[in-house]
Length: 353
Ligand SMILES: Nc1ncnc2c1ncn2[C@@H]1O[C@H](COP(=O)(O)OP(=O)(O)O)[C@@H](O)[C@H]1O
Ligand SMILES: [Mg+2]
Image (tube, rainbow, N blue to C red):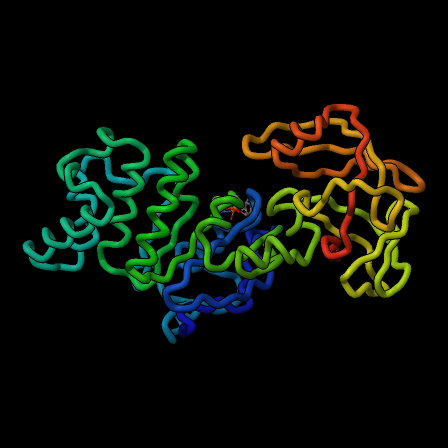
């Protein structure tokens, strides 16, 4: 796939506050990229800079081999959907969708045909003459999507398009948007603070923290190979431990020595272990196996999250583990049950602070 968009060394200052710090990334043609991060980390600012709705303080943006850094929004090639339903309330669905087409002076038949096509695409053909007040939140966002796609833009920008919707609609629409994007092959950048949304929809995730790109990669990579404590913690649930190097394949956690598969560098200070990688063990007192007490069991539906108070050599610490519900029942594990847990060498991953 060819590079379609590149953001180079972008900085954005609002007075003394710097909202974007040396932001660099590329988006390939047809790719679905999610910009993920906590509220206030600069996601919307970045999207607005790409759209030309906000001007960058420094840096360059190229789209389709053209430097668009200084172009006003109406001379850039994108469609955008915002979190809040930004439909024109006094226009019907049809006129909302055709709005951007009319300004491009297409003839009426061509416009009608395009509106039909788009309504078909988002499954709202029966709603063509309704006003936005007569539509549900999910339907309004589908109209907003159709409107953004109407002029066949080269780039689709989505700013938290699902976050005002309730959970069921959100889950349904995220599949719909993903399928639509694949079908049309339109290069897409979606901003979200919802890690599940990013993991399920993105080809690639760009994780942001305080105006800086923290990590980028496929959802699988970011989940299984977080490079920083922030990445590990923001995506999924995890355990983080302060550690010291003992040798190239062992570390010390709270006075206890653990074997690791990772190559331990001198400056190691933090490791992460995913809850699902922690196993209950029959044996005890082997390397990497520790005794502990179940303090909490949280029912999560298909599985159960255990909070285990683990006896390390110099102190206890809470370790979060995931278990299948059947396992907990079959082994009669309850609050205050003593268990042996295994922190397997391959599950221990070094991260930067
Ligand atoms: N127009 C503005 N003037 C001053 N500060 C702003 C402006 N827009 C955004 N900010 C600040 O920039 C930071 C990033 O905002 P934003 O990009 O909206 O974050 P996000 O979309 O990730 O929640 C926030 O601290 C916000 O207060
Ligand atoms: Mg935002």
